[in-house]
Image 1 (cartoon, rainbow, N blue to C red):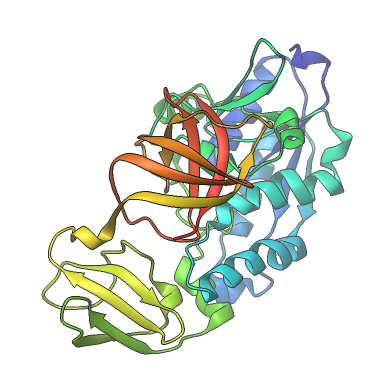
Image 2 (tube, rainbow, N blue to C red):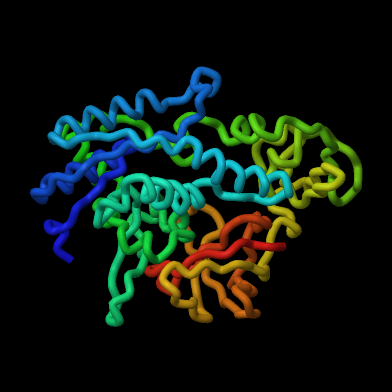
Length: 356
């Protein structure tokens, strides 16, 4: 594909990755239009939001290369769609992933409705690649940097969104990207990677949940003995497999079970209790990115980690599968996305929601 004939939009976040995306495109003789998507809350002082600094950085980089920058306000869409999805799931005791839905609903969704539809390609700083097979199908493919690979966050996008997606740094290692940013004196070169939700900057996940669901104190009970050993501030602040942040003495303690109706968290004492692992589990509503269903022998991820876990996939009908992992997996929780790759963890087929 000759992208020189294409009209390209670049989504600048103010971070190092999207800044290098713009550099790479300009280096190829292109003059894309830049956009900064605003989704931060209106009560910015309450959240200590970094969006102002992000916008300053994005503005500096776009000006450096003579590209115009437009701010697109997707605030309402984010809070109506992504936040509703997240809060509905955590209230039900599930473990959602707002970043996954942000890519589908906002970066390649709401932005597309507002301005992206005017462009042939939408370039982002994701660590992911694409390729075409002999049938002309476009595939989402993994980055060579296993630590930074972000295909798991993109595994719910639609085929039409993938068709327009461009990942100019997807073939690079993070160190290469930082080196380019430093060499080219890009403003965000020394900024730390965001640890917050999507592009909500410094917002802490628990603060995000507390803002909408508040607190609801309940008991923490040791699974084996039934003994109450502490209290929590709401089951929605805790996920299956969690080890840190329990505030209990004599650890380590693992969250192994939640009773949503009674608002009880069950923990187990000791290192990696057997009950915290699962080898076989169901997934539902499998979303195939390009319409191709996965084979029997696969690799998978259930969270954002560098490892791809070998497994067998058994179709049970109507978008449902049973996953038979090669080895027990720690912290499998309902509501998480199980992201499915081929056996060589090259191509990403899509993802389904774990239902146990």
